[in-house]
Length: 612
Image: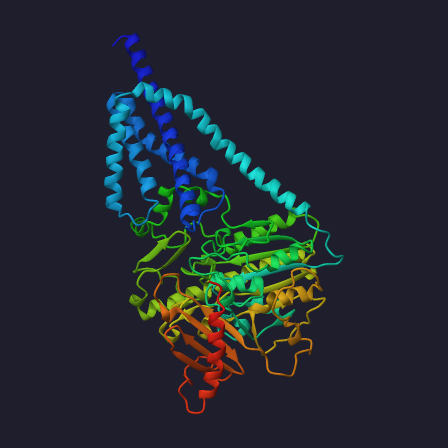
C-alpha cells in the first residue's frame, strides 16, 4: 500500500471516529432535553411527583451525553479496523435505540419487552432515514452541536449562579432580628422509635450522646408523633397543626394553606436552612422547603448525575444488577455524616445573623445501613443475604418480608440498632463541632423523630401501617442552657404538634405568624394547669383512590387511654399508662362503653376535619 493510500485510510478512520463522537454527544444532549420535556409535562400537566432536583435541568443533558459517549467509544475499535458505512448505520441504530428507550422507559406502565420492541422499531426507521442522507445529517450535527453544547454548559454555570443570587437577595430582604436572639437547630432522626434508645431505657447503649444532650436539657418521656410516617408528621410539627388538618399525604404534597415555623422565624429575621437525607418525602417536591431560604435535598453529586438520566435511574434500581453487585442500599442516600458536613459548611459561610436549621437523618430507615465500624456489640450484618430487596428511586424495602427466618429478623433488628447508634455518634460529632465554634450554648437544640418502626408488634413491620405505640412513641429532647433546665424528664404525654409553639415561646417571639399549639415549657417550669391535659390526636390516611379503609385510621390519647378507630368502623382501646405494649384491647370490656363513645366522638370529629 502506498503512502498516499495509508494517509487516506488514516484520514478516513479519523474522520469516522470524529463523526461517531459528534453524533454520540448530539444524540445524548438531545435525549436529555427530550427527557426534561417529558418530565416537565408529567409534573405540570399531569401532576406527577418527580423525585429529582432542580440541578437535573443541566445535569440530564450532560449525563446522557456521557452515556452516549460510552456507547460511541465501544464502536471506536470497529471504526478503526473497518471504517465503513456499516459502522455509521450501527452507530445510528444504537444511538436511536438508546434515545427511544430512555424516553419510553419514563413511563413505568410500559413493559420492558414492549419498550425494547418499540425502541428497536424507532431505531430501524431512524437508521434508514440517516443512511439515505448521511452527509446532510452530519452537517446538521456540525451546525447545531456547538449551540447545544453551549446551552448545556451555560445552564450548568448560569442556573446555580442564579439560584445563589436569588438566595442572596432573599437573605438581604430579611428584617432585622431582635438583639440576643439564639439560633435554633432541629435534628430529626427519621424512623427512630423511643423504645430502641438507651435514653429511654433500652437494653443496648444505642444513644449515649442523646442521653448526654438530654442530661443538659429536658427529655420528654412520652412524646407522641402526629402521624406514623414522614410527610404528615413533619408537616404537623412544622405548622402546629394536627396531621388530620393537613393535606400532606402519600401522593399529595404539603400545601401552603398554613404558615410554617420556618416562615415564622424568617419573618423575624432568622436565616433558615434545611439539610435532608430523606429525599423520598422531605424534598422540595413535597413542599417541606417552604420558608427555608436555603434547602439541600438533591445536592449536585456524582450519584445525582447518574440519576438525572433515565437509563441511570433504571440501572441503579435494576434487581438483576443489584443481585450481581450485592448492593441493597438506597442509591445516592446521604449519610448523617454528609448531612453534618453540608450543614457545617453552610454554617461557616452563613450571614452573621441567627439561624434556624433543620437536619433530617435517614440512616435508620430501611434498609438499615450503618458503617462497618458499628458492627461491634450489635450482632451480625448479614441479615440482607439470601432474599431480594425491591429497589426504587429514593427508597428500598424487603420484597417478601414474610420469608424472613427468625435469625434474619433478629439480625434485621440488630441492623436497626446499629443504624441508631451511628446517628447518635453523628449527633455527638455535630454538637462537638458547634461547641468548637462557640455557638452550642447559644443554640436551642431539639432532637426528635418523626415516627417509629414496627418489628413484629401486632404482626406488623416497618411503618405507615398503624397507630400503635411503636410508631407513635418517639424521642424528644430539648437543650437550651439559658432557658431550659438540666435534667427534667416530664412523664406527661405530649405531642410533637406543640413544637412550633414551644420554639416561639422559648425565643420570646410575639407578633406575626403566631402558630397553633401550646408551649411545652409548662411541663418543666411548674406552670402546667391542674385540669386534665387536652387530648392528643394521630392519624393515617391511604393514598387517594386506594380502597384501603383499614389504613384510614384516627387515634386519640386522652386521660390515660389510647383509642384507635379504622375507616371500617373497627375500634381498639388500650391503657396507655399501664399497658405500654398494648396487649389488651379494652374496647369490649364491660364498663368501658362510655369511654369508648367519648373518644369515638372526638375521633370522628377529627376525621371530618381532614384537609382534602
